[in-house]
Image (tube, rainbow, N blue to C red):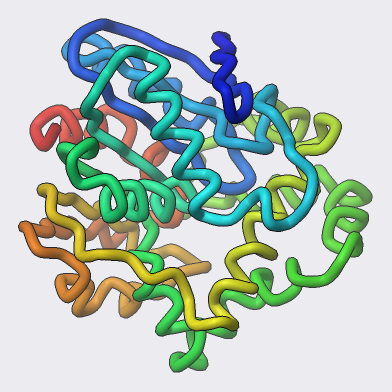
Length: 276
């Protein structure tokens, strides 16, 4: 595992290959392990960096909810791209990492050449559905629960094995007991629970004040979506094209759930290689 000391924070992660830069961004409650099966295939063509975002695993964990606003997370990654000596980057994300990838592409069109996301709608699409769609509000009950102080962290720590097993549930058996234990241990590292839930608290405050306004995304974009996602309904991806100036390609997988990177495995890496 590598550790990059930036002027803003220190970020940890893994790196493979050389050439043009690709960033891989994980979701909640994961870390760079999400991309273990992608580093080899993508590293054969690109300099591929799987990042532990701010607050996760061995990355820095600034205090306070405001430290986990979207603008702060994106700024870390912009600093990392420059730290690695690149001017441009292709960004891939899943879940929360997908939201960050969309925002980075919108705010930094001259830096982000392409963006690909697994099972995460555009942030403004999700904000709309949380406010207007009762079915999605029901699916996203945990987002509202995470707005409470200290109680979510306490309950997750108390029932960490059950929480991780439920969080990483998939239609088919994808995660081994060893995988689940790796994720549990990473989640219980000092400061990670508080930091990772602060992403939701910061987002909740932004949604209540009108959501994060993003420019329309200009670069070629790809969305890969498992339709059996229990947390996000397929309808949140409808009419997402309104948030893009360039092409948005959407690929749906009827038999897959929320953890599409791991569920797809080599097939997902192949899709990314063709797109990136």
